[in-house]
Length: 200
Image (cartoon, rainbow, N blue to C red; front, side, top):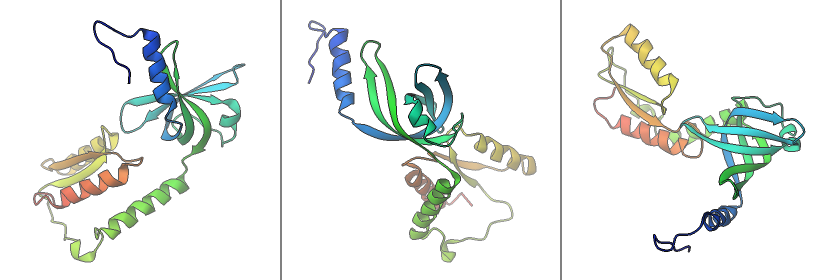
């Protein structure tokens, strides 16, 4: 472990090398995101990708050899992808990036498979059981809404509902709607809203 103090600070070089050494221990990782930007630098043999997390304002830079990029169906901005990559920390500039080894596009088939998996989890918890279903009131006391963080869908649902019934009230839970935490967070939000007596 690197020990420093105000009397014995470490030079930039030492800190950069320590960060690089730590990051190198991560090995290869799979990361899922949405292509926010593609930069094809002719002659470099590389394509530079800005990969964003759609549920939060967060980005990672990905360096992708042209051969890896061309091995999948044509990709464009806003495409959802899963990338096998090696995390790299470039010590001279302190820049963190991912070096892509393989790219897979997240297609409709995979999304439907994930949806089916989520439905099975919820069914196993009894959330679709007939005895749990309640008759919807003519005018609900409060509507439970589960959506992604800062999503346009939340705004659309609320605006359209208020056009039809201005007095409508919402109890909103913001969750991850994709990735490894989505099933856990959506399930927890459903349980929480289901246990709230004010939510119809």
